[in-house]
Length: 106
Length: 106
DNA sequence: TTAATCGTCAACCAAATGGTTGAATATTAA
DNA sequence: TTAATATTCAACCATTTGGTTGACGATTAA
View 1 (cartoon, each protein chain N blue to C red):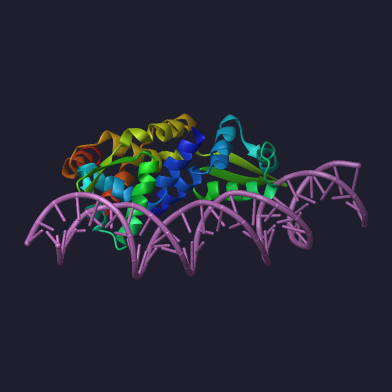
View 2: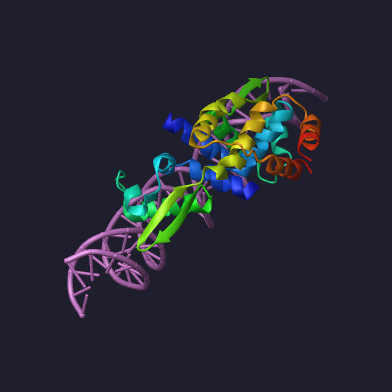
């Protein structure tokens, strides 16, 4: 869990990678097309896409010589939930939180 | 906006810093007390707290020789909103959250 | 078959990150 | 006043990160 959060948050910490995710919101894209608006090299974009894939924020599928990139926003659930818990449960003691989780989801 | 998201997400990308935030859910703490459960040096924890402060995830206030650290979860709104815009999160990962909290406080 | 396209790999580089230690600064207690 | 406590600073180190370039394998088009 902790390692997954590490990967997700650090993947999201880079503005190029966040912009890629926003681009993929509209449609699936080939690696070359993802790279087009950026001024960095194709290899650099390819590395960014690997990082996003490792964090499971996108999925990549090769069809022919084209590798398609697809947004997988569900993978953000863990991070989103973690963040939400810090806001929602502020000033509630841990026992209360755990009791709440136990009661509601078990 | 982008720079603020950079700061917030990269602050959250470190497990020590996330654990500190969870600790501060319970109560405000002095720097020395924040550092106590960790095996790294006090100076290292002090740096982590500076990063959290720069990202506005915590506030630090000096009273006498003690510097109190207070969670400021509202600062996560920007990141939280950004993530929410990328997808709908109907499947909240509460089991994962619970596992994380148990691991953190066992 | 040959040439172009798609994408990754490998080696390299500069800068950032997370850690250390020892000294320094404030503040409080004896 | 002196000593202890709380925290940061400065210099340093190893590793990671985000970038480059050129070569390479795979696939499609001419």
